[in-house]
Amino acid sequence: MYLPLFQRMGEVTCRMTIVQQNVMPHAALAPMAGVADTAFRTLCCEMGAVMCTSEMISAKGLCYNSKGSAELCRITEAERPMGLQLFGNEPDFIAKAVTMLQEYAPDWIDLNMGCPVPKVVNTGAGSALLKTPELAAECVRAAVRASSVPVTVKMRIGWGNGENCAVSFAQAMEDAGAAAVTVHGRTKSQLYAGHADWDAIRQVREAVQIPVIGNGDVQNADDCEHMYRETGAALVMVGRAAYGNPWIFREIACLREGVSYSPPTAEERMEMMLRHIRMIVDNSAKPPALAIREARKHASWYMAGCRYAASFRNRCFQLTSYEEAQRLAEDYLVMQSRTET
Image (cartoon, rainbow, N blue to C red; front, top):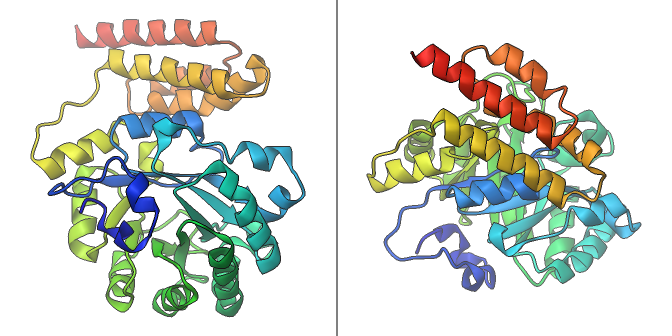
């Protein structure tokens, strides 16, 4: 089966319209707070991401009826199969939040035990749970009891530099009822620096019976292929490499299926950028002027690697309207055509 990781994940399998026979697994989109919103997830799915997960949702915020938390729970059919990711460290709140998430009909629920940012870690959630595996396991058990869909865990390999508790922690999550684990091959202390330890992902894969998803340092299709070979992961997850480049999922699919891949042209990049901005504005509950601010970083990523990128990216961070984005795209294409002649 395509995506064999879900063979032990119950109801989610029958919801996956992408499940096919004799097709190699490609790649999933990582949950990324402040980046992987509805617009971004939709574009990545269109380009071939086989599954995606929401931005982090505060379990306690959801329980206290936070409007911001509730807005993160929305799922569109274009994004499926899709999971909703919770963070928190109190089993009672986790259970209540999981119950509340059922109305959004997620295909699975993911518990974040890997986020390294201080505002999450300082509450005892995210990667802080790596230091309290018993509490982490109780959170999983609470979620499993409350959920009608599979519960998964996203984790890092340890807390401090050089530390590796990945195997024992993943085994504890499996024993608690997790249906799969995603392993980011960095410690909390590394944040996003240094190199991901793919060998640690392989060690987890060899130590547990549930599917393991590999994450960290997949920058292109070749990296994805190497991760599959070196870790034996059931699926590879792509994060920052998709910034301004949803085509990475098409690139990966082409390599895995033995089909030639053509990178997007400058015109296609600008067309996608403008569509992305429109989707952000259309999906946002905020006024267009505020939504455009959220779109600025995405616009800048579409400019990465181009000639005169610095000047164009500076303009991205000054956008105040969609019309300005259109003019920016036009100027970019003019400049690219001049450099080609």
